[in-house]
Image (spheres, rainbow, N blue to C red):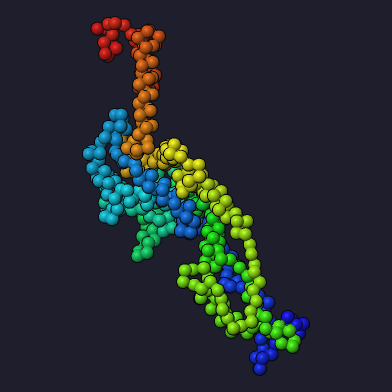
Length: 429
């Protein structure tokens, strides 16, 4: 390019054409990639944009939905008393007119995992208690506003209504601006302990860099597949007496438009570009593997899985994964993550319904992967019983200590030793 072209605009007729050295595709004025993860809406964005978060949250909800819900007697060795509390039991089986228990639990657990708080709104007839509710609905935390009582001490309160004046629930179609706090069950995750703080997900916020890295890497891989990156520069080689003649803006747009439309690597695109223009090509090559996108994705996905308590080997990862590893990982998922969370649900719903002498129980014994653990427990009980029996019949321990060894009594009373005349009740016959 001539010196005059570098300093002065080229005049073609009455039109002044500014000299441009590079043309970049895309809108360079678009703001940088941002996700605000210190709010509930940010958690929703992470769920929608970050596929590992979406996968882990949904799989945890599906695992939670495998539990069977019962109402059991809290004093008679977990005896089923569902018939005694028919309204509550029927409400659990069919929470509302649209959802089954499985649908309902998956929705509640999705909110709890993602937002670290979940709300259940019970529709209670006027003058009745929650146990008489006609339906239950899982409410998105983004739709719930908590109005606290002013001046009330959290630590001196004995019930929810002592701290919370009301809830405001806003849906797409209506607003309930005076909801009785006793009719709303709030289930908070372990890290969301500040009850008066504005709702947000500490877990999602702590993973903000991992989530952003994954989304950006996914977008980069998509862009590379779509546009194949910055492959090179098409230059104009036409010259006159003063030097190179730059293309007019209209000419540049036409060439770029034709290139994007006709040429490329897709099946129906041409692989060779033909033109009457005197154009040159300056290649711009870059080894995509140097970006290490896949390696970075793996590390970030592992951290997300760890934060949610979901075993990484259960994700789409075939490297070094065996059936034994999968089996152990599924057992760990239930024992370390799902069952502890289910206990929280059971305790929360027991209190919510005002059950006395009875409680909600969530049973996962029918889960196929836990059957082996159940068999191992039975084998352990059998061996323990046989060993204690030998000690009892040898006069080493008493009958009461025998029962204590089997966890049948916490504080056994009596010192009954074994004898040939001892009957099944432990008394001398």
